[in-house]
Image 1 (tube, rainbow, N blue to C red):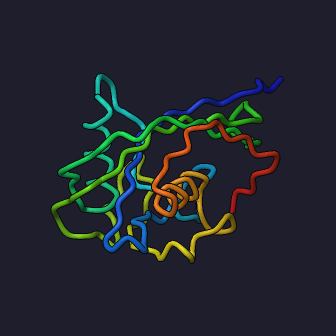
Image 2 (tube, helix red, strand yellow):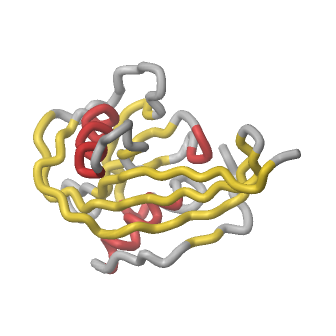
Length: 161
């Protein structure tokens, strides 16, 4: 018998180069595979949220966040069959990344657990529910309104591409 709920937690960064675009990764695994997603991921044992953000951002984009501001926590719930579960609850802690150092990796180093094929900047108007994760759409709304919406989001349907 399948249990109802898979739970995930991650830390993610919102970074723009010119206010009309968003830094995204090319997701290769999980419910957001083959979509644009935000750089970030799951904390390792005993790792704090800013350390997680810095590590994941660097691994997935080649960039190192230098100045960040915590925006808030948001929960995304949607149907997704994974292992023995039928529904996913993804809690995401969002940070605004104000400045970075380093060079953008259009292709990332692959290792076990790496779920990014590389990073790029995408114009906000090109991001939509057909090509982006709910996290990216939350980031897009934040950049367009300058207000972070931390209300929980439940989707009746979710398609893994």
